[in-house]
Length: 173
Image (cartoon, rainbow, N blue to C red):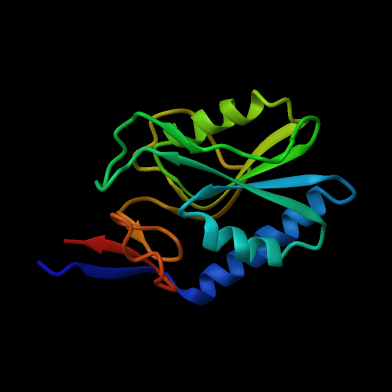
């Protein structure tokens, strides 16, 4: 069965959101040392575009966490597969994620990142999808609120496929 792609966010809408988030972060962290921690693999496209839209110097690092595998729903068990390398002690940290969905991964990552003694930890996500939220967690910066659907494109995947799509689409089988 061939999947159907239903457009949710066009390329231009994504670009506008990233620009606006970049302006807000640049204002909020002006004169401060900020470390962006991208959550691999999905956030790499968003993180790259976001970094280019910032007007402040930043350091960039990555963490990799897994909870989905090849399915369309989180298994609930969060594993850290790649650790951060940057010393974040006493620094402002912004976790950059592609999508805030159940909240399980980001909740676990926030606690994990806090264990390194940063000055602050905030969350930036391109997509805030609330339909399946399982824990109380909110993004400090969010590009778009989407109520439902399994999303792919612009870094988001289904079983490692469709990350290259320039738009975000609801994947329907």
